[in-house]
Amino acid sequence: MVVSDAHVPVLLDAVLAGLAMRPDGHYVDATFGRGGHSAAMIERLNSQGRLLALDRDPEAVGAARQRYADDNRITVTKASFSLLAQAVETAGMMGQVHGVLIDLGVSSPQLDNPERGFSFTHDGPLDMRMDPGADEPVSEWLMRAEEAEIKRLLRDYGEETHAGRIARAIARAREQQPITRTHELADIISAAVPKRFHEPGRHPATKTFQALRIFINGELDELRAVLPQTLDVLAAGGRLVIISFHSLEDRIVKRFLREASRGDPYPIDLPVPADALQPQLKLVGGVHRPTPAEVDENPRARSAVLRVAERCAA
Ligand SMILES: C[S@@+](CC[C@H](N)C(=O)[O-])C[C@H]1O[C@@H](n2cnc3c(N)ncnc32)[C@H](O)[C@@H]1O
Image (cartoon, rainbow, N blue to C red):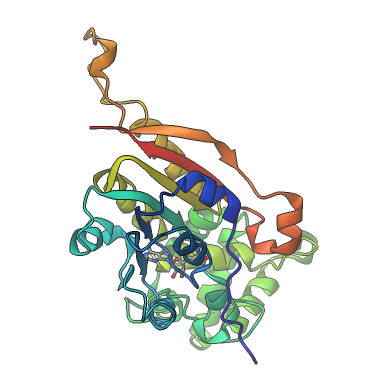
């Protein structure tokens, strides 16, 4: 099977509008992927401009290093974005960043390569780690997790209404033999969910795979960790652009932006002069979603939600 190494960047025009780039600015792409957004950002930089590209996936980092080996405006770092501040400090850009882009989720090359184990449509090892050097693959976790833990995870991270049935089926199946392949797990789920609940055009394993991926990669903790760090790395007037792909992520982003744009909390009974409230961020524009034409062209953009904020002066 030939696996494409391309990723079509989502909401590219809105990302560029949100970043409002200056040619000599310093930027961070915290989720390089295959560099769709980075390439457009780099095009807008002059010889003074700089881009720090991060990804936790060694294949994404390899692609970035190869592509930009001869471009000294670009620094590529293999890191989780929960280490954003450290990476920016090392790159000598602390407090001087004019824009941070965080495009959450997985890239097309990750999803489409059966060997990475993200997909129930192609059979492969049941892995799902964005960084295959980190922690354990899903197959190992599924062998040792309590049935109740699996059920809770499917409900909390997948909003799966059949979480109990699926967790029970997994627990039974693994008594016979370890579940090591994506197709084995997909088949167990298909058999566990009664046919009358199968939705047309949607594999019954969709939510379970999403939940396991979010869990095994600590995706929500990563997001909670990076958001406050963006306040430290951005210069006054610097932009934060975030694309999320499901309600669990967007809820965290929305709450952070709301709190940071509201200013310091004061005791409710204390009179506070208006200029003492110091918001750290200003919201820019509303929520952006892809147009039907973009979704037609790039179905993976379907659930994307983009939000923009600007760092206020300290
Ligand atoms: C949706 S893709 C980004 C696509 C990219 N904007 C492009 O146009 O090619 C998300 C990327 O972020 C990476 N990623 C996800 N969570 C991460 C994290 N916590 N730290 C670093 N990289 C992460 C994934 O490995 C993946 O390559």
